Length: 623
View 1 (cartoon, helix red, strand yellow):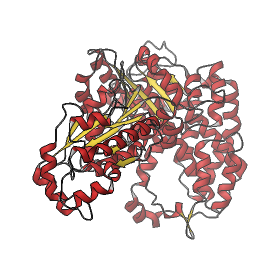
View 2: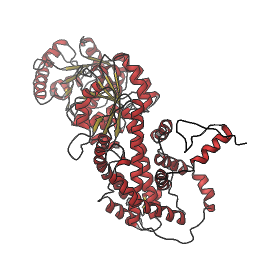
View 3: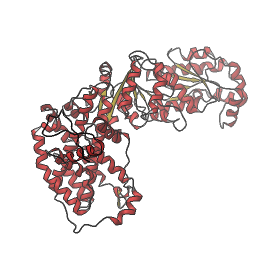
View 4: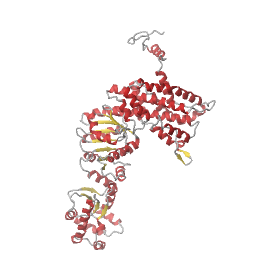
């Protein structure tokens, strides 16, 4: 039960209606309960005395008892004297009192602007004389906009150490995580900074989600931290990079031993490693959690990849288990993948695989758009999605190709300039640093870079040779080529994770990673389901007989597709990359011997010999 008190004109009704909007509690104005006689007296310019107020106060006390038994309410009432407040609270001693304070001149000016109200401005002085300010409750200065007063109330009205989880950052992903936590029964506190352009973020979020009584919102970081139970569990969903470092600097002094900061954004794994080490000195756990599934996954169940301290994961597990997607056996799609940056590394590779998967579908679209209509391509993709190649990305691509805006297909209205964020580039850079091949991911990334060169592409378009003869490609062969390239893409992704796990001493459990990626995430697919079984037999996919057999059987069709694309002048960056990676990998003798001879010729880099032990190195005097 909340009672907003203050003299007439202090803004009780305005604040009360705003609070009712975000709490879904009914709002009542005590003025509505005055008798006709009281209203007539004030309308004539006469102040009420205690005798006039007594029946009104008694009636309100009974109403407060009734409202409190039904879940509470918000009441705007002058409640000028302590004796009045005692009467109002005689049936409920747990009322939250909100006291509105302001200058006489400010309140007088408000009253003079108010129309059709029985309280006359000349009565203000009598109320000011009668006002007895309590030394309890939440005191707010009314010289601030009502939005600020609402946030001040929220920041001061919390129950200390009551929230199970706190979420910082109210973008779409942060909102989704918070609501997911609420829906799963966790007392959840949210925080967003109160800066220009974001003043309404918390208020708007609470206003549209009043069905969750276990949700509270803050714009004051100290109050937010204080509202969390210990050990505190703080989920960050803000932009990666310097913003996270700045936030850590702000909140770390407010935390205690054993508190946990979970970074759920796409932070670089090396930043996560650094932060974990720095906060370990303060006895604070910092864990990186890859979150895949987009806005819908955050809200209804994402794939969660956690790296950090095992003890922190154990504490977080009830939340992670509840809000994650569930695999086909009903198990949570969340897993502990190793120390410090392991979770963010795995999420980075996930996104790299995603890049290549998207590029492969774009290249198939490029091939098919020369021989089929959009509805026909969509129907083909829907057919594929009912079989072995089923995936989330295939499913949404079929839907995209059917979406129209008026008479136009939406995809035709979208500029062919594909954006990219850090994870695609990071995957490629990490592979280079580890000496691991991920040219599927890099080819997809560079294809996006080429797409951004729109002006140059337009200027060169008349240089592109035309095919000698237009032809169509066999759809069954296309499906087989698609499977071939997808297998190569996934092999490279898991190999990259294995290489990093060896370097950083992380757990490498590929079957568990594959399982976590079967639901909730963007790259979920039937192929991923199959890989769980493949990894249970052998951690190295290139030692799996069935997978090798699939590659050998589908390779001719991948080759045929590339031949077709060359003939039809269609760029297939990722299909070509997959094919040449496989052929090179299956070639016993590569022309790298010539490269090594060149290196030795101009730089005396030496070389190993096929007829000598590999421990020996040689140099030839080429000149």
